[in-house]
Length: 287
Image (cartoon, rainbow, N blue to C red; front, side):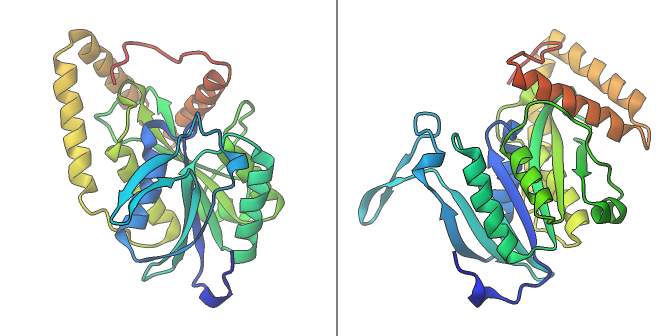
């Protein structure tokens, strides 16, 4: 990929999101796609090496065009948005299945050439958070400058990780300013889409990037989503009671300064549970 004709960049920020293990309810990848869809963009290229994908796990799509059918192969796209306030590179696609170290080396090498001022890695995790409350967003960074600027903490997590964790470590090794941003998705409504999760990530991205982002009809979609979950849960007394318990627990602990630690602990339990194949279930699961 060549970028010389696009320079100079205006305080370039990078948003990275992958579908799959790191993306409960597709909230992270859908957020990246939403940003791409609201602004004019320049397609820089894609990482589509077939060595990185298991096509039985991430299947190609048959598409139709006026010229006839064609195959759309899994790929990671890189597109530059000329946002009025700063340039934003969006990297999004399915989580690779194979050769993660090679893939991450290729992607991080590309990002290093661009010399971004900030890289934000998006993720979404299943959590015991109620859908009727604001969905918490937690951020971590190992960059001392970002910790001070954004008032963040480093993660002390140890356990299984996805491609986001691998890329994060390589970005740190290359001394690129990097932060991870995770939204908590109610585990009992984990099927995509998750517009409320997207809205929460967009709101935090606005704060971190220092720009105004176009939400389009996302707030309306989030409200409809919440109403639909309310309606479905009201039809099942057990589910309604379980959600009420989550609401009471959330409200009891939703004290300024305490939420971050609570969600961080939940995040670590979630990843460990996913890594050893255990179900996280407490209470009924409807999706």
